Image 1 (cartoon, rainbow over the protein chains, first blue to last red):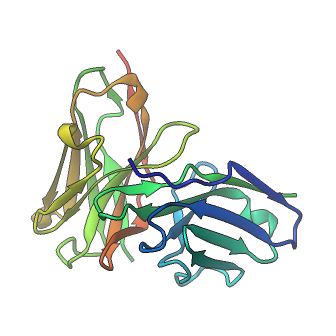
Image 2 (cartoon, chains in turn yellow, purple):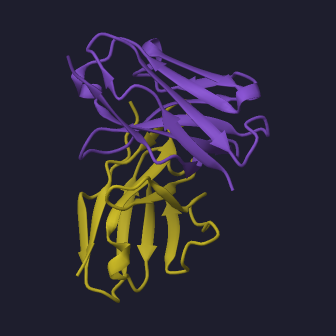
Length: 108
Length: 120
């Protein structure tokens, strides 16, 4: 089965840039999506189609993808950005939709 | 603005069938998007279960496909999930969501989720 691999945790100080990676064999051909999930809440889409930001998402959130790795970047991370972040994509056949294991972002 | 609300039994016995319904408001389920289910065991990550289009076409996680039935009721603006032969390991928060289609499916709006416990 297809897998997306993320680091379990990332930690930054407020104002620093946080980068969360997601690796998957099909990413050269498939878009990556990123979700933010704060404690006790449903996930929220923060990046779609590798690098597009939904309306209402702060500009400090950006995405990129190169080869088999997609990256979510939070420029000038704030305490309110503390959350679990999940990447999402599909395998090369398009039949298996998967989430990465999630990365816990700590901002302190 | 689309809103989604999950409903169904919160407690299911092992080996029985889990049944959930998602009521959609503020948006017609027949507009053309897909609709899906995702689950999250307590303290763990997200797992995609299945998606359905208003015309009835479905896509399911290969690892769950034999036990999953997803259906849609456009006249009620809702869709449903049935998962048979559940085990305790399937205790999870079950989310319903809208899946936009761009050649693929991705979830842009989610319900608040409902915790379903599998226990005797």
